[in-house]
Length: 200
Image (cartoon, rainbow, N blue to C red; front, top):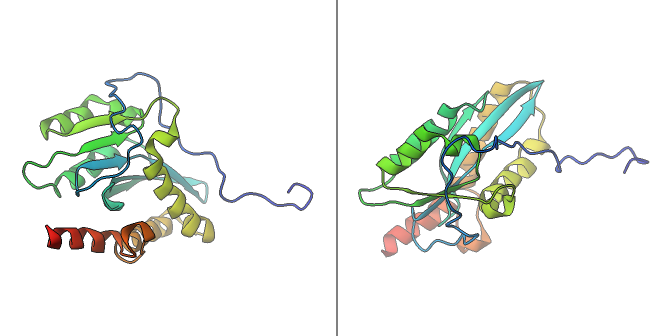
């Protein structure tokens, strides 16, 4: 690759939010079992970083592992705590009374923070965390980030963070409503959820 002047556009250094023990840690309850038989029983979340024109943009989504749907997300130019707490507030508004999913993440400082933990506890949600330095424990979320970047981010050039932000918003809408998946019987995440609701 060096002789031909080739550079990889996919294998880039990923954003890491681990700062050591800064708050509450949770056990790895998910244990790499990413299957869910009903909506809103298992959620996964993480943060990823984008770069454009010397600036950065951070995406914090939450995914329902039942159908891979991105339930809520927040985009910020800095990886601050409100990026994660505002995302969680949006996701919580989608829950019906009495529904309390397990929420899985890595051990990033956002997810150890007392405010984030308190929000989960107040709604009766159970927190789960990957083991330290083991990205495979949150493979479903990592897979989404890989798909987003390979299908959208790496294939386009952006003149501004605002253009990138708008593009990510459009991609997530496409991912939820238009991108079919063989694992969902050829349906989109939203179609699969609606089909399950109709059969219930």
